[in-house]
Amino acid sequence: MRTTATIYMLTGISIGTIMVTSSNSWMLAWLGLELNSFAILPLISKTKHPRSIEAATKYFLTQSTASCLILFASTINAWQTGTWTITQMPDKLPSTLMLIALTMKMGAAPMHLWLPEVMQGTTLLTSLLISTWQKIAPMVLIFTTSNHMPSNITLIMGLLSTYLGGWGGMNQTHLRKMMAFSSIANMGWTLMTLTSEPKMSMINIMTYMLLTTPTFILLAQTSTKTLQDMTTMWTTSPTSSITLTFLLLSMAGLPPLTGFMPKLLILNELISQNMTAISIATTMASLLSLIFYLRISYLTSLLNTPSSSTSTTKWRQNMNNLKMTQMAPTAVMSTTALPTLYP
Image 1 (cartoon, helix red, strand yellow):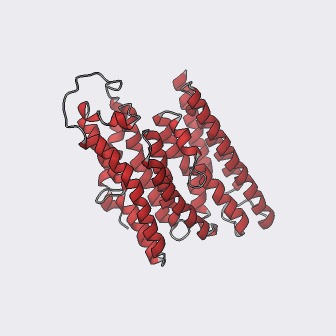
Image 2 (cartoon, one colour):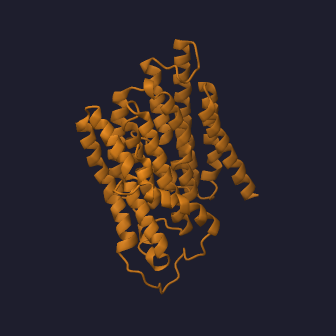
Image 3 (tube, rainbow, N blue to C red):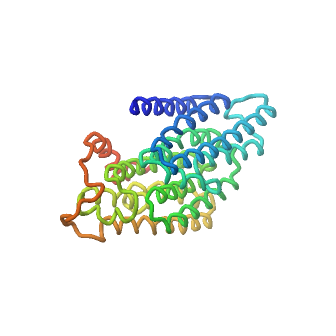
């Protein structure tokens, strides 16, 4: 029964995203976003724990507020232009409100405080959905209206996201909160070139999803939730430990891994737009994220040498071969796809 309900909810999430990506009207896009938000609520609260109920409530309130802003902005735009078409948004007021609403749905600063709490209160696989799939629909809408978005506000939100994401993740010990702040920082990189080169922003967010998927699957398969769990991963699965280390370093943007190329392209675009100071500030912000990525990598691969464990820990279990088979291609692409991303 639980499997059937999960499949039903995942189908609703998929239909909602497809509705948004294929729509040309704000009303249909709004309906798709609502279906997307309501379908994931049972998945967030399915663990029957007060923390998960709290996470579902926070997610519902945040997404409802963002949906009200989207409906309000689209109504103002329809009143001014006489059409509900997504691509027609010439006025600054509805475009600014729409940018705030969509970034709230994705968890970008300064509307980011809900994301770490929601991801901490649910399971790792549901956190994977929140940090990847749930961002597709609002990102498509932002990409469609990028030529009408206010560039100054977008740059400010991008810088805030990179800095707050880096600072917030430095003092965390729970991996789900770390990944949430990592998502916030990556949204900042995505927003930096949204108005000047939106295709580059899409490359960055898709690369991040490619990196995040095997990371969450690997953490879920080993039941690794805190930094303390990372210190003993070597003793039971050296291969998983090495793979996770490369994934984390790739997310940090270290060359020659896959995550380095989108950041390089974004910095190159900022410099070509005569925004050298902003590119330097963004580069400095990436060092904040690098700190907690390197801390996790150190605990995973350098703290303990490979040895046989003398104790049975809570996550010593047989791996699900199907899920590990699904993880393998994304893990390889996450660490070796650098040449294919160069334009």
